[in-house]
Length: 228
Image (cartoon, rainbow, N blue to C red):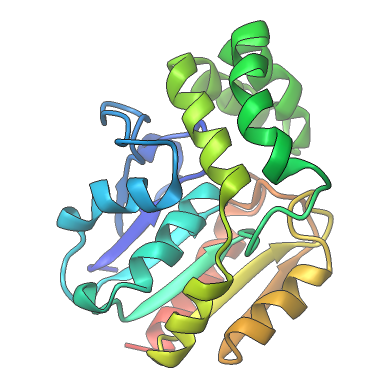
C-alpha cells in the first residue's frame, strides 16, 4: 500500500517488520540512522519529518506509535490516517516519568543491549521470533537504546491526540489483550482524547508485529482501504 510509513518499536529497526505493503523507516538511533538531537519523541519526529511524503498514512508500534502521533499532529504533514499498534498515550507505571530518565541509562550500561534483549524477549510468543527479537535488540548502540527508553518514559500524547482529533484524522488503535503497556485504561484514555478512534484487540501481548503479523496487517489494510 503506497504512501504508508511504518515506524518500529524501541530497540528494533526497519528490517524487523514482516513483509508489509509500505515503507518502513528507522527511528533515530536505530539501524543506520543517527541519534536524535535529544532523547525525546518530538526530537525523533523532527528528524523523520522531512522524509514523510504528503498525504501519507502512518503505522507505528510502541515508541514508533508515539513518534507517529507527534508527526500526525503536525498540520504541515497532512497525514491522512494513523494506526497505533499497542501504543499508550503515556506509560502509566508508577515512577516511570520521575525515575525512568535516570534509571534507563544506568540499566543499559549495567546490562547491555544483549542482556536486555534476552530479558525482554520472553514477551514474544514463539521461539523463532524470540531469537529474532534478541538479535535486533543486541545490535543496538547502548546510547541509542537508552535514548529510546528515556523518550518513551517521558512521552505524554494526550495533547497530540486532541490535535489529531481536531484535524479529523482517522485513527486505528490495535491493542494486545495482555500487553504490559496498554492495560484496559488505554482504550478509555485514547477514546477520551480522540473520539473517532477505531479499536481492534488481539489475544496477545505487546509484541503484536512479531506475534500477530498477518492478523495485524489484515486489520491495517481494512482500515486504510476504508479511509482511502
